[in-house]
Length: 152
Image (tube, rainbow, N blue to C red; front, top):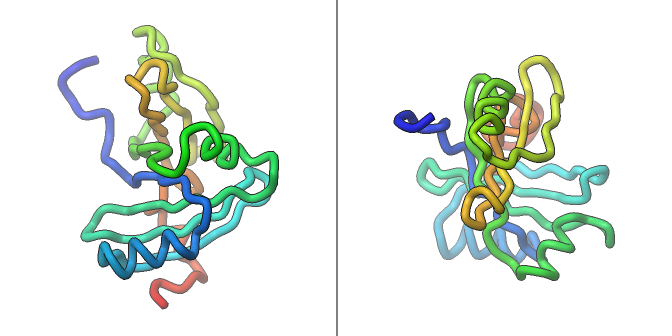
């Protein structure tokens, strides 16, 4: 299992209480460039994707009282929520990780080309790691930008 990187970093996810305030900080102070925004009421969040010199920063704000993000912020406060890595065969990697005793949770298949899972923070020293391929998991999947503004 050791030796090769698991995948390429697609984005970092940051849980925030107020998307507009966080976006203003990242754009005005950090120099990030707006890519797009989206809302996922079923999953309980809205997001903004920003490009910071090639690093994609995903700001996530909870929607609704039952949002997993609201619970996360209540427990941990605002801050880094997850790292997402892009890799071609997430199912195979998830099986390999599980075979080596890594706790893999929340596996979802969105389409034959899009799959995601998470490495539990219990296995990764406190960091939630998302592994994914395709849309909607990867912030840099081309489908995200179809029909969406690229800048404001």
